[in-house]
Image 1 (cartoon, one colour):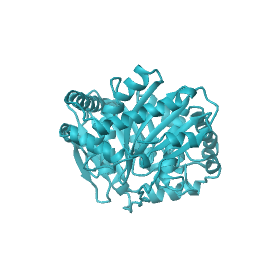
Image 2: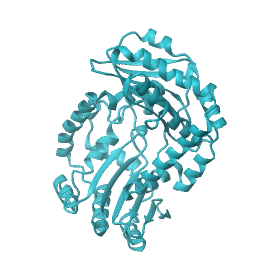
Image 3: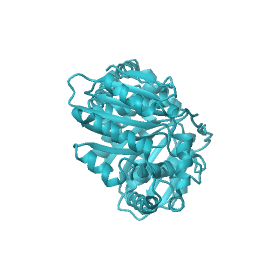
Amino acid sequence: MKYDIHTLKNGLRIVLAPRDGAETASVFVMSGTGSRYETKEENGLAHFLEHMFFKGTKKRPSARAISEELDGIGSVYNAFTSKERTAYYAKVSSQYLDTALDVITDIYLNSTLPAKEITKERGAIIQEIDMYEDMPMRTIDNVFDALIFGQEHPLGRTILGPKENIRTFSRANFAAYLKRHYVPANTVVAVAGGFSSRKVLANIKRKFGGLKAGTTSEYIAFASMQEGPRVAIKEKKTDQTQVMLGVPAYPYLHKDEYALAVLAAILGSGMSSRLFLEVREKRGLAYSVHAWAEKYPDTGYFVAQAGVEHGKLQKTIETILAEFKKIKRVPVSVTELTKAKAHLKGTMTLALESSDAVAENAASSLINLGKVRGLEEVLTGIDAVTASDVTRVACDLFKSEKLNLAIIGPHEDREKLLGLLKL
């Protein structure tokens, strides 16, 4: 895959990934901001603002006008807010790319943020918060993040924010946040699929070239100071206990990031992973169990997640910990290492088949890494991982004093659970 990267005088970055013969094209406009860049009082503002961008521009004065135009060309479109990125995107048949680009850039550059829509959207966001509260599988990560990062650090707060904040945000709050974070140097426009690079580049330059340059905001760095195992329980009447068990890990561009990815694949990626076989297939403790590594520019974590019967929580924790211990002490076989690496390479290759995935990956890479990391670079990094690398990383990360256990369910005995956390 070839990526053409251009930087305008105001600092805005453009990345184009044309593909001959592609029937679709996607545009992403991404800002390097999210809940991590909020103060405690602002928590939830970035996500609320994302909603407001779809409420109207001068050219398209209502949410209906925006949605009808995109629906009218059969577009798949949406937006998302994460802890460090906010993006607006549309995927279309290649013949409609000009329309998709016009709409997405219009809402990004020209949203009017009407006050009456802010008032109405409060209710929708509060309902969104309530919806996820009824889905413990989707909110257990909030409990885990607050535990591993601390509730006073932005990474430990939720993306949606607390309801009390949502009820108080004003148009002035949105305008101030926009001015501070939605600046060209903090913005990437990515287009992938079937299109003319020359035409699209000229179009983007016309739309964004006149923006005034600005400075990007700094985030509050995080360094883990954990000295003992920790447990957080969100007591809730549920039909199933949700559990996340993990440790601090590595940031982006760490020398062992590929070894950590292979470790995560061995333990919890796919139906032949160790945790799936031990927790589900052998013991029937859970329907869903998996593990992964989460990364940020300055920190990260490795975590396993499962949903289990209330009475089987202790056995599940013990089984997961047993797998952590085993991979530290017993070298991974050549067969298992080869399978894990092939699994990783295969899933990553498949994930980049579509134009929207290519555009999102390119934009995210530029924001997170300062460059576009091509698939070949990633596959080469995975290939270089050895069994001894996996053992070394496991020994580095899996320590009793670094364990974090987050639970949602009808449980109260924190001390008993804390006593289980030994490696």
